[in-house]
Amino acid sequence: MGKLVIIAGNRRAGKTTTCNRLAKDGYIYLKFDYLLDAFDNHLDELSIFDKNERHQQEFAFFNNLVNRYYEDAQNYNQNVVFDIYDFLPSEMLDLNKIDDVYIYYLIYPDVTISQIIDCLEKYGDEFEWNKKLSIDEANIQAKDIFIRNNIIKDECEKNNITYFDVSILDNRIKQLDKLYNEIKELK
Figure 1 (cartoon, rainbow, N blue to C red):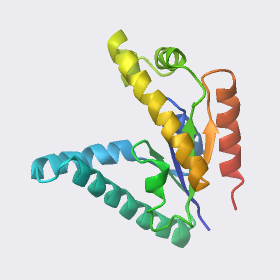
Figure 2: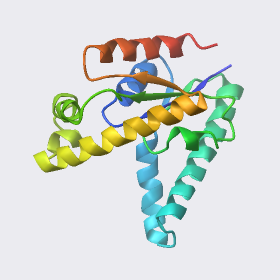
Figure 3: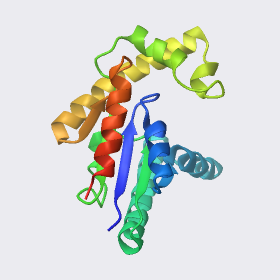
């Protein structure tokens, strides 16, 4: 039977890199950020939701997609991988298929803000968002990532959700390889 995998976590943590590798192995790859942008454009046209209601609608949309793709994974023996930034581990517990999908978070919790800034400058192609940041914007993003890393780590540990420490140092490639291999070996 097919598997449905969700790779979540912070910015510049290796989600897209890992999902692209899995796609080359035949996984159906859904970059939820793109789907969410389209969904949010629709919500903008409606202009009826406040920030909290909007987030609830976004999660409901995601939950619906997970349900549908899980059924396809089972019925058609397809492997599916979601790349997602938007939801914390505590929110993932509300998925209808929480017991049937594999969820992994990619974070780098034990690094400094300056190391995160270095990551924003170092990783990615020239056309990616992080390469267009000013120094002030990079500082703001790094602080947000630093805070979010700690929240994700705490919530993963509290809720027994697997996370990989893809620290910005040499460990990053090893951890992404380990995640890829673990997903490939899922039964």
